[in-house]
Length: 229
Image 1 (spheres, one colour):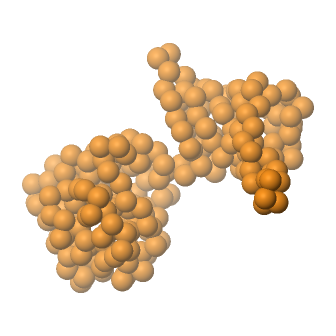
Image 2 (cartoon, rainbow, N blue to C red):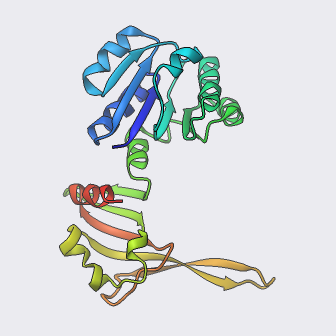
């Protein structure tokens, strides 16, 4: 089970925490305001009211084996910067921090954020999906309940044909395309990669390393497929 800490329970942080928990992750939700902690306590694994600019308070959360910390503090830029720096000092490797504007984002990167997001562009649902299923590159929902998803090919698929893998029978999915990077030599003698799209690949097409699969299927089937990563 993946473990996440979400710091800052405004609209974005609370929505993200709930979605991560609904997708099966262990989620610790934290805010300095008790009313926000109370609002979310039944929707996450654990909700805690602390000041995350306090190093001792952060340490007490026992963040060993945490997959990522999301600093979603919205109103207090100084608190988000200090919290991010403390998390880096504590050895957290994956810190995703919300920026309020570009300068704030640059400072967050300088003090240790591994990824800076703007919720206006990266909504909670998209971020939660990328945290739970890092192999999922793009996801488009269709009106009839089907989805189109771009997914990195897993190592276990390399050099196997589509007929061998039988996505329809094993996963309930259809491979409608393969995006493949082909190395070529440029005019200057450098090796560069040209992207090739194989539409409606034949059953004898073998999947290669670095291929991106374009899959169509029901949302539940896609999520079950990604859960096996």
